[in-house]
Image (cartoon, one colour):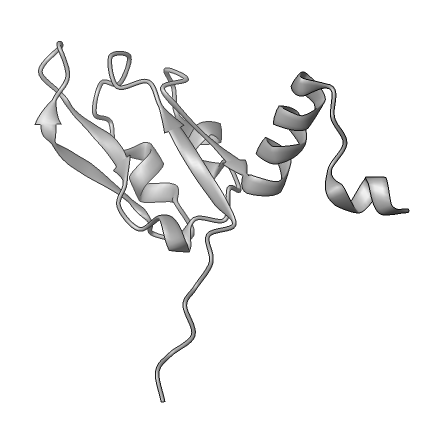
Length: 97
């Protein structure tokens, strides 16, 4: 029997050009889903990437510890609500009730 597929609950957004490679986001991520990229930014630093998106909860612990505001996490349900609010639509569950 195969293992159930894990669904992502969150994601992170990275401003790679601002990152100075301090690794706080990686060190304090409770899900251990962030790693350094193999690429360099314009300043010559490795920047973080979401290496295991299925493990991300969107807790924003990465953003809370980032001294340069180069990364932040967001729950997918909050991201969807923000998109719907911007578009002026309601989510399907809200329309039904």
